[in-house]
Length: 151
Image: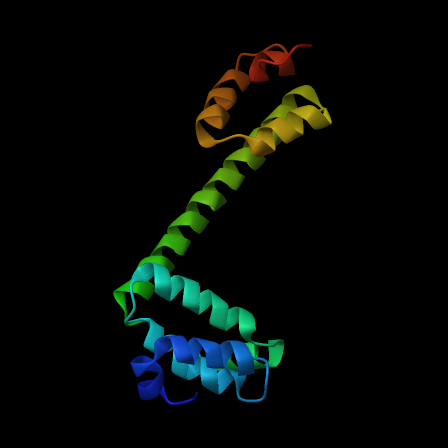
């Protein structure tokens, strides 16, 4: 199914078409018809169906579809919401990684090479713990004092 209007009228049939033929030579055209149609569905179904469609494509079809939508500005509130959520999550993760890297640099400068357990603990920590440890680095006498670890 490569007709967008037909896909909009029968979204489940369009999904089946993508699952059946998505890895074939018409995969990108099928996805290009199906994806706009499922935007009109409720959020959970749209996300589920979109994932199914994209997963059904082979690499060639996926690249072709990506080139079709390159520079495309999303129109639906659904897509805009999820793009914004992805950006926000990426920013949070980037800040957290920056905090972890800064703390590791400070600890290495102060105490030398760090044990693997300390590095693993820092790499798994959330922002509140990192902030607390970063404050302790200034006055701690040992790595254990900073991380509340037994020496």
